[in-house]
Every structure is written in structure tokens, then in C-alpha cells.
Image 1: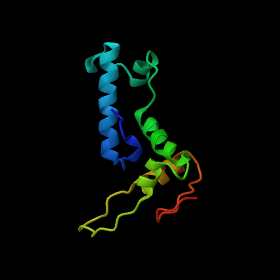
Image 2: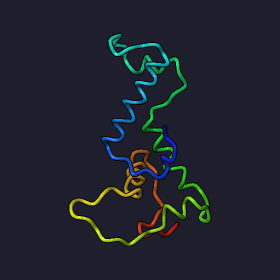
Image 3: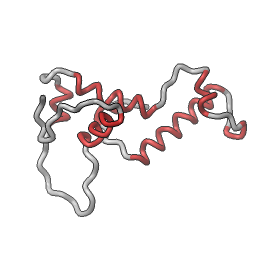
Length: 117
């Protein structure tokens, strides 16, 4: 379900959809239904499953720890100049990683232009 999540610039509605899908799977594994009205924290007690949003953050931040000559890190930092469409710009991966670092109170060492430390 999280394959390739290191490079996703996830939006809020995508996070909500992932959480809903995850809880649906957890309920099915535990044998509960929505009608049982069991709180999600109780459903998770029997399973070694963490919150999917925290796992997404860990996957995105894991790339930052890689060496400077790692292929995935180079591909993520590579900038492509294209014309901008009308409207609000889409969130970039760098913005999402900066938000993750702020949530975990970490310092970010990425230069926005695609450079490294």
C-alpha cells in the first residue's frame, strides 16, 4: 500500500483516504465491523501496526539520511523547468518534507534549488 511513498507529495485528502483504507483493513483482520463501534485504538492493540501517516513521514525522511551519491536522492533533487499551469501551484516533495521535519522538530539541511548539504 505504501510502495514508493518516499517520493509522494501527499495532500491532506490523500492522507485521509489512506487512513480510512488502513482502518478498513485493520477491522477486517481483527474481525470487527463498523457497526460494532469499537474505537480504533482498541482495534490496533492486537496488531503490530503503526499509524500510516507516521510511516509515510518516516519513509520520506529516510531518503534524507542517504548519501549524496544515492540514485534516489539525486532523482528527487533533480529539478525540471517546465511552464506553470494556471492556478495554485501543487505541493512539492520538498514542502512536504519540510512540514514533516517541523512536525518532528528536526532541522532540514536541503537547499530548495536541488543542492545538498
